Amino acid sequence: MLFKFPREIRNAIYSYAVTSPSPVIAWCGPITSLSQLECWQRHVYGNDCVAIEDYKLNSLPVQLLARNLICSNGQIAKEAAIIFYRKNSFLFVGDYTWEDATKWLENIGPSNRNCLARIEMNFRKPPHVWQQLDGTRIVLLEDGWQEYNRREPIFERNIHLILSDKAVDGVVKNINPAVESFFRLLGTGDESSVLVSMHLSNQTLPGLQLTTDEQHPYANWLSMDLPNLTERFCSFSISGVPKSRPIEVIWKGNESIVAFDAETRKVEEKGWEIVDAVGKEKCDWAENGIPYLEAFFTLRRKEIIGVIMADEPSPYSWLNGSREWVDAYLRN
Image (cartoon, rainbow, N blue to C red; front, top):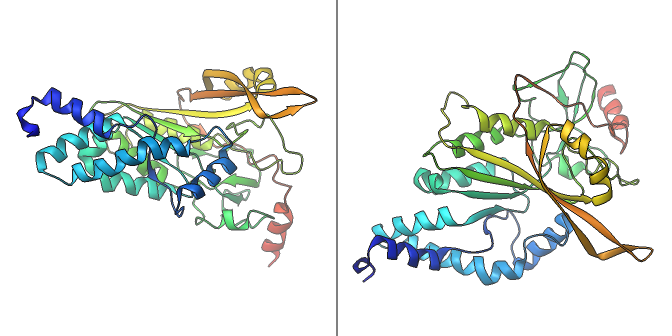
């Protein structure tokens, strides 16, 4: 019946059936229910996160219908899959790793992967490790972060990150090498572009910490290492595999509008292009009756010319029991 219509009409029918205005969840890790997902989202990303009601109303029915269509007649499956992967935005949430994201790209296959146009990632900060003066790294079981820092093994410093001659020891981010595999897979295929949006947790801005929690000043620290690496991975061929499709990575987050506006120059000096910054009132928070305003920003890493210097260790390395734990570890 469907093949009585020309391809343009069939595509319009597929678009109506398998396209969602809200993101389709590609991965949610160990989260087993939508209510659990909503609690996770609000805890890590605040109220401006994926609206679960929108997901249930729009995305979930699309996922279920797309699954049935893609498993149907060969020609219908092929045509529906092209629309499903090209027209939707695919979201990674929960406790995923870069291996999980890479495995998803592998599992959907090269033809579907080539159709991808938008990927969203609720960004998970890499765990902490202690980097010694010679660049070697050891496990860090700092107070309150033991479980988080154990979630992945210790990785060597990425070969694209060059240590400064004046290297110091301290807490650094443990960046998974699967990041490179992810962008290598995403970068092969046809010439259509793909947009990757990194959704940062509250008051996190790579390279700068504009708002400091006096009790947990280290909590929102994030170095420039990962943004620098992703920019490099999107610019060149990786591991000898030619890159044939453009990849754009943007970083979206929120900060105090006062702090963001005051430090705009520092943000740009760190290598960021400020694509957009919109002020919004935080409806559930006011100080002395004055509404708290946040800047919802979108950043793009500027092109890096030459080698990438590894970022300095966290300025809060001496807090949270890190230094004491490392000294005790090395003594033993």
